[in-house]
Amino acid sequence: MAIHRNKMILPGATLGVFGGGQLGRMFTHAAQRLGYRVVVFTDEVDCPAEQVANDTVHGDYQDPSAVRTFAEKVDVITLEFENIHLEAVQRAAEVTLVRPSVDVLAIAQHRLKEKSTLRDWGVPVTPFHELRSYQELPVVIEQLGWPLVIKTTNWGYDGKGQRKVQSMIEANDAIELLGPEPLIAEKWIPFRAEVSVLVARNPSGQIATYPMFTNVHSNHILDITTCPAVGEMEPIAINAQEIARGIAESFRLEGLLCVEFFVGRNGELMVNELAPRPHNSGHLTMEACRTSQFEQQVRAVCNLPLGDTSMIQPAAMVNLLGDVWGGHFPRFENVLSESRAYLHLYGKKDARTGRKMGHITVLDDSVEMASERAKSIRERVRWAEQGLF
Image (cartoon, rainbow, N blue to C red):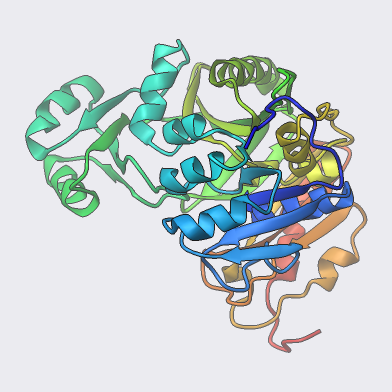
């Protein structure tokens, strides 16, 4: 089968998504609004994306037959999360287009390859060192110092697969817990801020970056994102966008990429992680920007002209975790009664502690006002004893 890499994939075509979570759900909404059909591949049942997709293929990512059945149904495949077995992406690419490519995914899902590749390109990254055994710790400590973070090289997200350590005993415990595969040790960064930039590139080479997002995490999970950058963060935002553009160009990216940074005490930027897909910090683009990150992903993988990424109004986004439910039903009317406040729920039935169940975006006249309103609204949404409203 001949695959025409640079043709436009126009509305009416069928798009495929590896993964059935909330990112796939919101991608599906954006694609369907533009007139595309969407088929989801997932190993879960009744997942968020499956609830809204035109069709779903259930199967194991390591099942060649299931992956081929999926690939034969669609004109292009994209990703909604990066922890996918590379063999599945390679098999799908034998049948149809996959964007981003397996080469991008192979780097982005492996922390050591990711940091090494970026360093070799001249991109500033957090200082790191490969760690294969407890015996290598003296060399690692000499280069990175205490404290440091020991991480798995694969399958980590939302703080999973990593430990901060401050002594040889803690480091040894972390190696025993996270090993036996090679690990990566990273210098602990006393950062001023955590920020991210979304960048899209289509196969024709057009690149578009979004304004920089400022992120605050709680227990390693994103809690609140604000945009645009204000005050002393404005010049940092320009630099972050340029770095993100350079990474997209070096990758020859086809799709959407989120670049996560630490901002050091002196304003220096260091790339922490890459995510070759839509990102939690970009959810506010659905109301705050002229083109949402999900529509931009559709445009990029279909080789359409990229959309306008400029902001409509300052915004803040807060995550709704299962904690908000508290075993009861939240007061969602306290979002819906607010002007310029937008509720998004992901269709998940089990509201577990720490599980992302939805988010709220608030627009206002300033970042500060949007942030305060978003946090206040979330508190008023928390479960009430009367249960259902």
